[in-house]
Image (cartoon, rainbow over all chains, first blue to last red; front, side, top):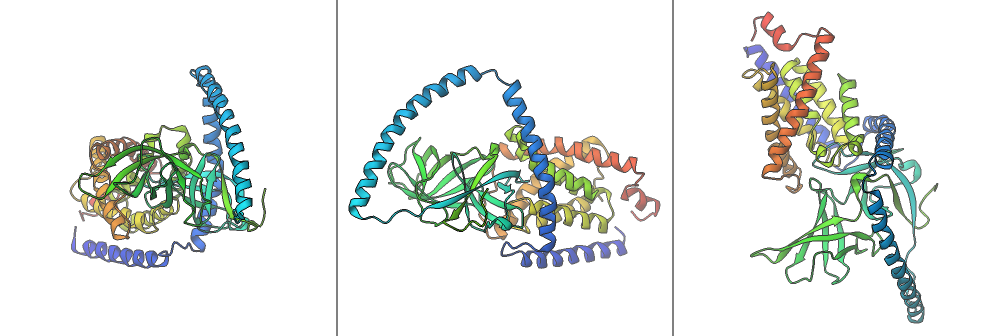
Length: 276
Length: 168
């Protein structure tokens, strides 16, 4: 590199680093500016159509071409439906009994949340993180921090909101933390993601806590984002540490976030401006 | 070029359902940043890198600034490397992208830690090598596509201009 070019190189790099520092400072609270909102809106509009196209193609492949194991799968599902029907009947009985007991003890009724449906329009661009973009934004009353569910369980919470779109930090993202409990033993921990493996880790579970493989993990309701008792996943591995006081618990999310199409945003009762 | 970056990033965020899950570990921006560092003039490369990495950040859950810093570092490294290794053959492109993927893996973990997050994005073992191999394959195609676009639009690479000026 000749002398002049070397100086130009370092001057430009220094300028970029200064601009970068300013830019990071500006975005430190996770806020987005006007230009960002325009970029997200235009990107979201394109993403919406591209995502429908890719999902449509996938649906055609899955529903019409790749039907090799469908019959066997159908038989398995029929058997499972029969088993679940008998479980539902037993649960209805338990629910009625629970209701009667609550009434007799004068328990406060649980807060009812309103669910607003939304479509997934894009996934995270990076393999290291995992967010999803929804086609509902501030104009629909969506706010940062609201919980997001699917019919199978917890998905995550709203991270950024623009006028027409919102970004959801899923529970398999490494920066996500959701308060959770083991249904059987009531052991409590924080569920955090491992986006590369598309699984989660239940942190801060003590060595003496009773956790077993296939245990169900539910939301604890302590974080004021999700109602108590929502399905989050199932324990797939429990590894007690050799020396420490904690154990490593791996959890498989109940929701297949990779193939997710529709979700519900959890609005505290009476907060949604519009519902579809 | 801006349109190409825009479309490529948006396709990466929407085409997941059509590809197997391992495809998620592909990094579409890295080959573009390497290309900008190697073959484009410094101001042009810097502006495009900052724009592309900002768009990338807006499409990710990572704290804003993490990817911008990481790709700026990669751009600088690719630029400095261009004075030693000028990637103009398939093999050199693949080796360069492979090594810069490994470098990016470490630099990203450090930058994430600097931003106050855990080392959750860092994984060791064969996963990194697998990712680097995958990236060099896909990156080679993207890099090749960009070089082809240059040829079709009669855009001379930076190195040729610098050689003609006798400044290299």
